[in-house]
Amino acid sequence: MSEPAPSGSASYYGRPVIKAPVWGRAIPTYLFTGGLAAGAALLAAGADLTGRPVLRRTGRVTAAGAVGASICLLVSDLGRPDRFHHLLRVAKPTSPLSVGTWVITAFGTASGVAAAGEFASRLPRRGPLGTLGTLLPPAGRVAGLAAAGLAPALATYTGVLLADTAVPSWHEAYPHLPRLFGGSALASAAGVALIAAPLAEAEPARRLALAGMALELAGTRTLERRLDLLSEPYRNGRAGRLLRAGRVLGAAGMAGAVLGRRSRIVAALSGVALLAASVATRFAIYEAGVASATDPKYTVTPQRERRDQRGPSSPHLG
Amino acid sequence: MDGTTSLSGPLDPAPDAGYPDPPPRMGFFTDTSVCIGCKACEVACKEWNEVPATGLDLLGTSFDNTGALTANSWRHVAFVEQRRPDFRWLMMSDVCKHCTHAACLDVCPTGALFRTEFGTVVIQEDICNGCGYCIPACPYGVVDQREGDGRAWKCTLCYDRVGVGKTPACAQACPTESIQFGPLDELRERAERRIERLHSDGVPEARLYGHDPGDGVGGDGAFFLLLDEPEVYGLPPDPVVTTRDLPRMWRRAGLAALTVVAAVAAAFAGCSSPGRRS
Ligand code: SF4
Ligand code: SF4
Image (cartoon, rainbow over all chains, first blue to last red; front, top):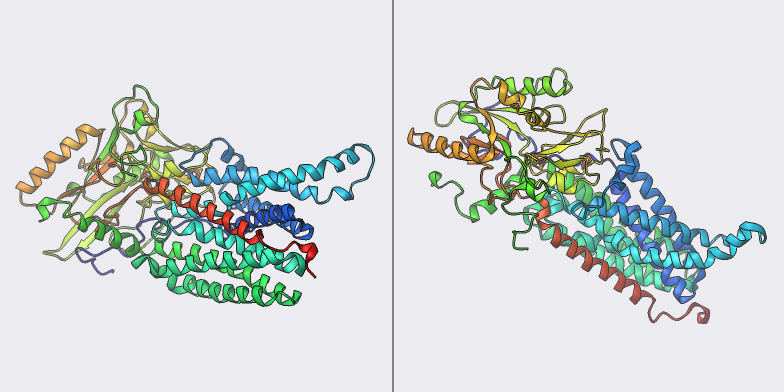
């Protein structure tokens, strides 16, 4: 039958030491939609405060839609979706998923009200709906600012969500993931704004596209190069290809953002590239983590090195 | 962090979890040097805990057709065949370690996972919603999602039996006392004596695994006597509870959030107002 495993071999029949995450595509997709929602809420608040109505409306509607999608994705990925409300039983700072649940619940409520504010003018003028119509715009304004206040947390906590696991290439990346995800969130929201907003209002989105994508690309570079053995999963296989695709798309999106000052079409193409780059990067990071969990060498080798540096654990082994 | 917060470092988990006057911490000492690979523990566990069958698996890896700890196997007997120096078999009944600092418990967002008064770690099946977070959090690859059920499952250290003063089913069934159950303090003393005995009997490769409260998980409630390196049995050589680094992770997220705010402020500041653009 099988070859006997030699003594001191690094694994038990090549089996994984830890369990890879059982989440499906819903979670990397959520990493993208959650970031998009956060970035869009920030853009909307900035647009509101600087008098850019189309940009504001785009941001609020995008934020509400993307956070709605995020909640659906998160619930659908549960093993028991009918028990989603058990997430609201407790608030636990040691669980990034618990923290995220509360952030996204509050953010979802606020950005829903903010988006509703955009449609107040469509309500009838009289009666109770008329009262609602006069109350909604100011309420939407307050809610939009509240959503923007929560957005930086929503954009970055997902880095902690992945890192707070035994998955080697995620855990060791903990200093880098939140900023990378924050940048990706801004770049993707700027992408939607470049598609939807008129040139006259789009200048802040162009700048945000550059800043966000710069953070994202600097982050992926770090993951590919600075984690020693644990960088390998970010360079190899499907994850490596996705990460490189994200870089090409991101660079194209940045170029388009600069060149698209006078052309709606170039601006919109740049927006599409920025969104695609963010999606590719999220999936790449997710898949690299799964790869690092599946091959036992990524768990065993760094731990052995750490232990050997401390000196022999068992004195009797010399 | 200095490693002495309640997220890491040595401590007694039941009082730390809020039990004012708990019974002694209970655990397993699995002495693999006397394991004969009979799998009575696997079977007894399945029967007592009504763990579903997995069907007929033939993995082609020695006599091990279970493969790993899973949602449907809460004890797993590993078989390692070695030709060094002479042919030998290593057999080891693996189980949830009931860590002093249990990552699964730290990250569970529903409170389904909890610390019992005996210091063990148990999932409440009526609370778990199958979010799956505990699964990649465990540094030993223990917890797993059950297909068709959606929830996470693992060893309960027979919480129901221990609660009425009984021995867990696996330890009860083990014919060689390879699996020993008892107060953790006693088990640790017994294990030290056993190691000394084996070393003086000419088995220098014998070593304890998971016994040290100073290790990366604060010591295991279920620890082992091994005859080779941990990774040979599929165990991580130097596991660390992931939440030890969590305060640092939140700090990095806080800095990243400030960066995000700064980027947005900079993008809007100094932009000419839209009305004045052509
Ligand atoms: S071994 Fe894994 S499942 Fe068991 S208590 Fe420790 S972290 Fe939890
Ligand atoms: S799968 Fe169940 S036990 Fe595991 S973290 Fe989620 S709710 Fe808790």
